[in-house]
Image 1 (cartoon, helix red, strand yellow):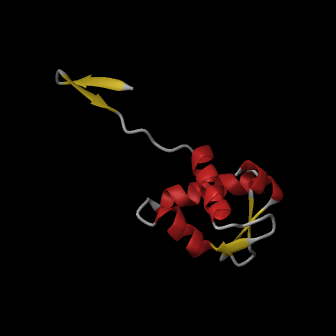
Image 2: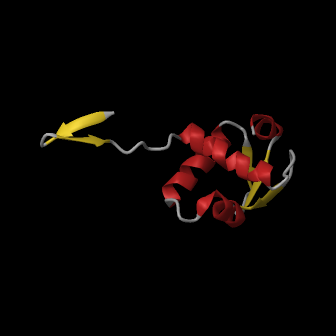
Image 3: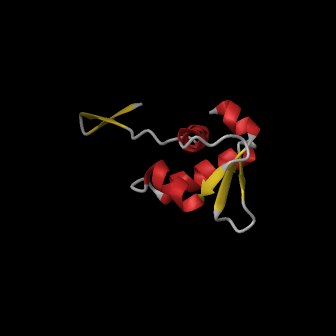
Length: 90
């Protein structure tokens, strides 16, 4: 999308959508050789996802992946587990 501002063309920053972020998150788990039922500490997943990225991106990824049934968060919120659906989607 382009806008003309003061006779100068600028491109709008493209924001990541939750589905793309969720897919990136399950790719992190798959890249770590997680199979359905396997998981990792959520902080490790955050580091692999990209610590330099905004925390909001990671939160959106977790929320979407959990809503899609791709991951399950541990009761304490410190562990993330890949589901069969998430493994197939990755």
